[in-house]
Amino acid sequence: MCGIVGYIGLKDAYPIVIKGLKRLEYRGYDSAGIALFDGNNLEVTKTKGKVADLERVALEKNSKKGSIGIGHTRWATHGVPNDVNSHPHYSNSEDLVIIHNGIIENYEPLKKELVARGYEFKSDTDTEVLINLIEDVQINEKVSLEKAVQIALNQAIGAYAIAVFDKRQENELIVARLGSPLAIGVGENEFFIASDASPFIEYTSDAIYLEDGEMAKISLKEGVVVSKIKDGVAVDPYIQKLKINLEQIEKGGFDHFMLKEIYEQPHAITDTYRGRLLANEGVIKMAGIDDNIDKFVNAKRIIIVACGTSWHAGLVAEYIFEEFSRIPVEVEYASEFRYRNPIINKDDILIAISQSGETADTMAAIKLAKQRGAFVFGVCNVVGSSISRESHAGAYTHAGPEIGVASTKAFTTQITVLALMALRIAKQKGSIANSQYHYLLHEMEQIPSKVEKVLEQNDAIEKVAEAYKDSDNCLYLGRGFNFPVALEGALKLKEISYIHAEGYPAAEMKHGPIALIDEQMPVVVIATKKGHYEKVVSNIQEIKSRKGKVIGIVTEGDVTVKGLADHVIEVPETLEPFTPLLTTIPLQLLSYHIAVKLGKNVDQPRNLAKSVTVE
Ligand code: F6R
Picture 1: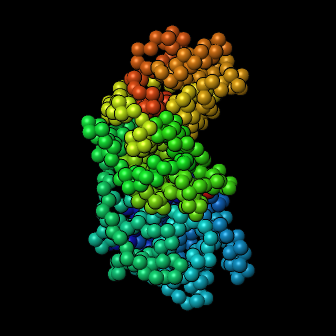
Picture 2 (picture 1 turned 60 degrees about the horizontal axis):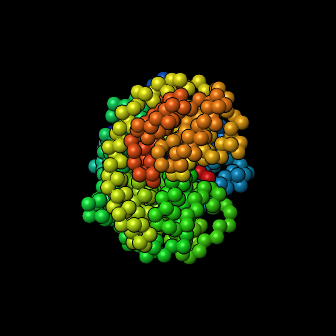
Picture 3 (picture 1 turned 45 degrees about the vertical axis):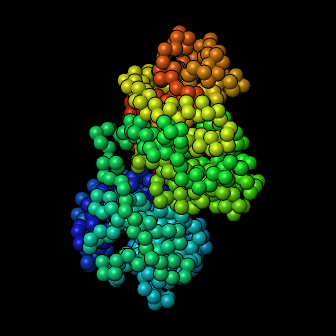
């Protein structure tokens, strides 16, 4: 949560930092701020609201000068979103400024000590405590900014990615990370810092990703000097060549990132299996699995940990793994797993699923499992992310950058990777019939063109959205492989349209939710052929006899549900385990259109952030 950006070079920092903040707004968007140094003055401009509001305030103040700048877009953790709590924060002397993504957990005792020593605080934030702690160390120990940051961070408990600037050491920026991401863009006579590479990708493709527990001094004279926060020991920075391009992180003619990302799914799924799925040869190649195949074949149990949409992908994977690989699977909310006392045996494998690769609870679950001896396999989208690095092995989803806060292509590509894994292991174990294995491989190759066909129904789905946009509640029902899709459809609707929605296994309806059904209640029912079709048809009849409105997601050519439902959206026929890759698409589009019609901010829904790096 929170996005940080910085620039040190020869150009004007303001436009670079502002543009960078706009790219990072998906990480938080309740307030924004910038600090600029023009050689004399260190000026902070900040406001509640979005980066566009910050631009307005900066224009009114005419404060845009300087070739060193740091900026922040916030998702509040300590203190309500208001001007004062926005970053950057000055130290008491106003010589230092800081931007911070993360939480300093022991800020209260630190603050008490500082108050006792005469420090005053304007905001309620933990960040203002940290910058004054750094100033206090500088004053008392008479050390450089770099050393003061190092000493102060050794007193802080929590998570952070920070950038600090001291106007008396005007040629350098100090950055550090622990638990929150931080990338440094290395250009010619200029350096950038950011929570991810998107703010600087148009200027340089050379990046250094700081590891947890590392800090760096960045200056035009010496470049990037990396060291360990713990003891100041120097570290050789590794410069990575980035492969993403500008087009991938822009809207490309779509009104919203979410819509662009929904439409990218055929391509994203192809990218996910490219080079891995060799259907004609009957081979699945996945380095992370191939290198550890014995562990998977002999695994007594797979534990999947994830949050939100990634957790839903984990539930689909549970069905697929158990069906083909015949390994018992448990799917856990990472936040629950880490705070109980889970039983982890040495032959257990923990699969962590995370689009961002930065989710704090998932990261903590991995660490716990590693401590107890489990082998950890990461399924992440963001290359080089913390979870991918913390895992023993892994597979990337290759979905490309997902900017819309509501996850779409991350979900379908996670299912694709997990299905490939399950089939690869099943083949090795001999737990799948050869003919079925080959059939599944060939069918997976057809999925992208089938997703294209679902997308062609966008206009019809928009009409359904028009009919139900004013509903207060909505139910989503599915069975088997499509039960998690019902959960995901409900999550998509509530997070971007703020309409209350719940997903249930269809058969559970009669154990409670049926009481909610009346003529006002839309019920989205996934009723594709094969997946307990007749049972689901009975569920639809139960809803209709109570006057509920049914939106059926059906297989092409269906007549039975068409005769019963108020609306149907058809998806092409596929093998049952792959149906979630198709049935999810209309639910994404339905939520999208409802939210747009209600005038909601689709890409940046209230209270949410793309990357949840707080616990
Ligand atoms: C929903 C959504 C969230 C994330 C969750 C986990 O659309 O985006 O529920 O799925 O916060 O995030 P990752 O996958 O980055 O760990």
